[in-house]
Image 1 (tube, rainbow, N blue to C red):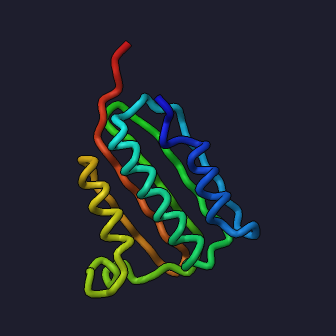
Image 2: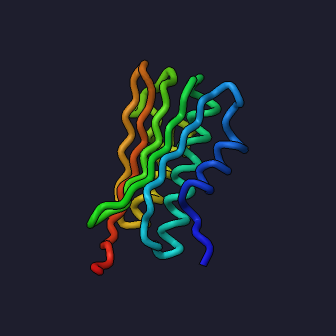
Length: 135
């Protein structure tokens, strides 16, 4: 089975999305295979978060971290851009659907999405449950 998430996927998204002037780093600890549907949801959340940071934040740096602990997988995308009003963009009435789409994807994977933003940058974190196999 081909892995959907991991350092290669993050690097590929960054290569296609992030301007050469923006520092882009991916750190992915080894994770156990996840169901394909969950991997797909995490990949698309990461893709949307990276794309938003690259297109709208004016960031000098974008960092992606993927890690697994005993009970969950955590995807964290951060940037040092100008930030935005998170509350103003959660509603579909704003005409922006990226945050809502990421939140729906996290929920479909059984997890949750947290977004924080300030004038110092934005943090997007998706945490989805999964159990590590015991050796």
